[in-house]
Image 1 (cartoon, helix red, strand yellow):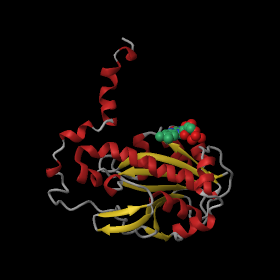
Image 2 (spheres, rainbow, N blue to C red):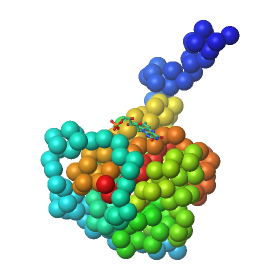
Image 3 (cartoon, rainbow, N blue to C red):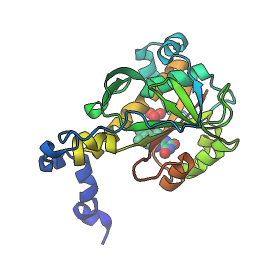
Image 4 (cartoon, protein in one colour):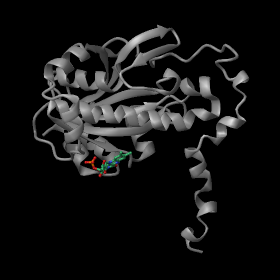
Length: 257
Ligand SMILES: Cc1cc2nc3c(=O)[nH]c(=O)nc-3n(C[C@H](O)[C@H](O)[C@H](O)COP(=O)(O)O)c2cc1C
């Protein structure tokens, strides 16, 4: 039978994910938050032995480097898959990280506001940067520490761009990017508040993050391309995450035009 002949059966479960029906079945009186279980940390702890690199102030960098206003950035936004050999500066990288996941205000040990919206301000993402051409950063894998305004150097690897492209199912433009952003989710941060209603909002939240990257890249004169076609296991392995409590959900390549 052609799959389109009985689409309800074939697509039902996945379409259900897009609806909010599941909320009716959740007892919000017994979520972890309601039971006063401590919330997961707002930021994944940094490995004790990781070198930390201070980032320039992201908001100041963005203000200094922006060559256009929001109207023009929205007008010019597009996916860019062709990059020049130019390197990003650390200031540019700091601006892009701030625009996508920077912290605006810490409300309590359990919650903070960032430069992007997030359901219940739960912000489940961690940002990893596979840096191939960033001034003052040796080629390798880094993790953004938004609460510290720093990058953690996870490991050095001169082939990180090629490996990122392989993990993106061989999409060649990834190998030529100056850097590739990998966003992982730590679902427990959202499940703590929303239980089974967490997962759809995590997917929605990811879109906001990448849209800010598009707009910030455009305003800085660079280019980015969202990536959702990737090898789950290869990405998780590259980042060194366990694939259960933390796993890749979205990526974007970044470079100079
Ligand atoms: C969720 C999502 C996933 C995407 N995944 C990929 C991808 O894996 N590879 C790719 O080359 N482009 C990817 N894109 C970019 C789209 O192809 C692009 O946004 C679309 O062609 C429209 O072009 P524009 O962004 O220039 O308007 C993705 C975009 C989104 C929003």
